[in-house]
Image (cartoon, rainbow, N blue to C red; front, side):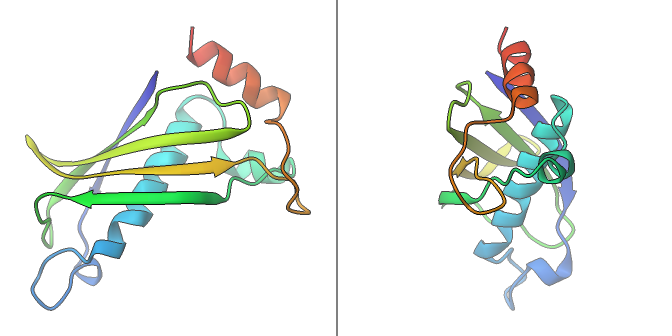
Length: 133
């Protein structure tokens, strides 16, 4: 299992007229968590793209338990429970202090520049193997 944590502060633009974070605002936070996790294990997304790989979202889900509001400092916890083979399945938790506000999941696949499914690059396989030891 690999886990990463990153903090975000809720911006006013991420809230609705009630001052509550709009539900769609959680998806960019999931992306922040995903790219942070990859960077922390030595796979910056920019380098994957430069090598010709993409990780499109195949599935996404979110469950909202408590609202976040403007100027909250949130911690996004991203977990990769299993070493990826063709797909990467990530789980997310959004915390405000000790309060769990939301959970979510995304599923991604490695594709090449033409959009064809491919296996992860050797560098990624090596990084995943090292991280899962």
